[in-house]
Structures are given as structure tokens and as C-alpha cells.
Length: 480
Image (cartoon, rainbow, N blue to C red; front, side, top):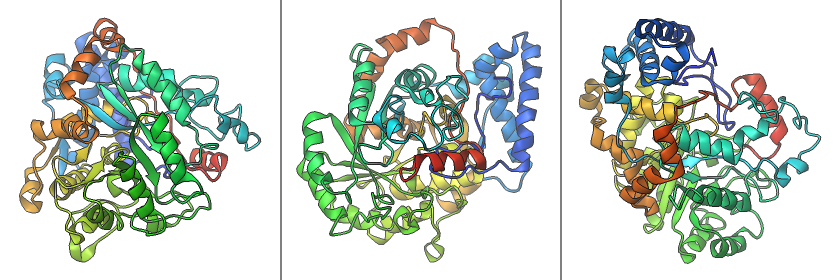
């Protein structure tokens, strides 16, 4: 705990990309933030632990990072907090707390005792941390870091998240670390919180695998599917597919429509190691959205690629990353507020360490996808509790110069409220006011009002090349 900070800006990956080390400035900023926390704890007479877990600990960390960002070249965004928020809880609360409806449309966990573990015996990770490096949660079994109990604590107890979508990683049912049955069990577990409606469920589909379209009908009859989840870059033969492919993508979308479940969440960007890059881009999103205007295309990660620094969109110099999504929409006449939605899981978490890229990424998505079409997602539990992502977003602002120069919209409280949850509520058909009322009254809500917070500030994904290589080797043909 001594080396952890309440705002977790670090090299942790979600397992889908190689961890990107922090630059020298941010590496130096971590001990600087830790020293500031120790100084401010002494100033306020609090213990380090008490200060660290309070609002002033988060504010001190953000202010320390912002001090580092301010020394670099022109910065397009900033964490904006009053300086007194570092030692006055009331001042910190003005920025870092709120009454926002927080709807996380991308969360994950695994079936700790699932068949997938037995099928992978002998691949070098069972019983040790070598191939599954997420041992930092203190569990003897590292896979238990992703259990249902851990998921509920990290996502609902230790953050302001009121409702979430439980999603899937790529893999056929017999190999997937999260089965439909386990997801349904977890939803039932959460629903024991007196019907708060806190958890919606995706259903995974591998459209280029035999029998998957038929399986969709069975799943839809027996399972409360809020959206289908697909990975266009992955297939059982490690061959990808396009949304507008007449052999695979179009029949899949038509099947989704016929079954009456028209939300489709698609992993785009964050290319999976060793798989064809062309299927990770968003070139097929615009054509599919134009052909099926009654289908909601939820673009997970918004096309973001960790190795591509985000800049202003230029149609004459289209790069990969988020620009591939913007370009595909522009070229196909899909304007802001249409049937394409940009999701921020892992994207915002990575961009927290680069405020200029963050300003361009958020600015482009709001401008071209639409202020009603950017969805809050965190990719937790891979990054531990999403509370730090929530607090950092509350404090983040796009520089006025970028607003003027690139036509970006300021991140006003009303715009942030849309991104935090109101936009997701529209897509998934939930009532924000009703969910907030139920969440405040259920056991988690009551516990949060009565008990002292005990966040771990831990992350559970690979944090280095060595951990990532072991992780990939252990999981074989099914990337996480």
C-alpha cells in the first residue's frame, strides 16, 4: 500500500496491449506526489492512511501530476482543482464529488472456478503468478482477484458507479474466462441487493465460428441480453472479419435485428497481439452504421491505440486510433448523434497520463460522434476500482486555446453528466433517477453511507513486458 497512489497513473495494461512505461517526468512525479501526500497529512494532523483514502489524497495526487504536466510543452488539457483542495476536504469535494449518474458500460470479471482453467492446465500459470500476474490483490489464488466478490467491492463499493454492464473477452464458450452462466449468477448475486438493477449483461458472439448465429437465438431466449459483444479482430482460426462483410458481419447484424436486440458492442482499436491489424481499425463502422440505421453500434475503446498519440483530426492525414473512427463516420455521412457510440474503457485510463492527447481524443469524439454519443466505461476490474478514473475525469478540462483552435466543446458539468451516464442510459433504456434511488437504498448504498472506505488502490493487469509476455503465453489463442 505504501507505494500506491489514489490516482493510479501507471503502466498497467488490461491484458490486450503491451504495458507502455511511464516517461521520466511521470516516473519522477509518483514519488513527488507521495511526498506531497506525506507533507499534507502532517499539515492536517491526519495519518497517512486516512489522508490517502480521503478526498485530499486524490486532490494532492492530481495537483502533483498537473504540476509536472505544466512544465512540459504546450498542454491541451489539465486537471483543474483549487490548490487548497490538497488539504481542505471541502475544497476537494467541490471538484472530486458530484451527484452525477455514473453508468459504467464496460466492466469485466472472470469465473474463478470455470472450465477454462482446467482446459489450460499445464500452460505454466496454474498455482503461481507467472502467467497470471494479477497477484497484487493479496489473494493466494491470483485469479481470485477477478472474482464476483472482488468485482462488487471494486466497482460498486469503492467507487461512485451506480450501474454497470458486465462484458466479455474474446473466446468460444468452452475457453472463455467468463461464461454466460457465471455472468447470470453474478447478476443474480448483485440483484440480491434488493433489486437495485445495478448490473446489465452482454452476450458474447463469435460470428465467424460455426453455429454462433444459431447460438444467438438460444442465448436471447434464456438470458437477459442488453447487448451483443464482438471482436472483429479475432476468430477461432485467428482470422478477423468486418462488420460490412456480406458473409459474416452483415448476417450477424441482421440476426441481431431479427432477435430484437439491436445494441452491438464492438472492440475497435487496441490491436490484439499477433492478429491482423486491419480488423482492429474502424473502417467498417461507417458502412455498417449507414446500412443499419436502427442498430446501435457501441465502439469499445473508440478505436484508440496506445501506440498512437492522439492529435487533431485531419482528413488529409488520417492516422489510426480514434481518427480511424472519425474518418469512417465522416466518409459515410454518419453525423454526431446518429447510431454510433464511442466508449471510453481503457482509453480514458491511458489518456490520463497525457493531457494533450486526452484533450484531442475527448474533443474529437464529442465533436464528430456527438455529445450525446460518448459513453463512460472504465475496463475495470483490470485496473482495480474505477474511482480514480471518475475523479480524474471530474477534474479534467480542455484548454480554451484548443476549444478555439479545433472547435472542441468545453467539458462543462452538463456535458460530463451526459458522458458519465445519461448517454449510456439512453442506449440501454434505463431510468437514471430510478437507478439512483434504488442504489442509494440497497445494501451497498447503505454500507457506503455508514462505513469507512477501505480502497486498496491496486491494479490487477500486467504492468511490465515480463508480466505481459507471461500473460499472453498463458492465455494462448484467447487474448484477454
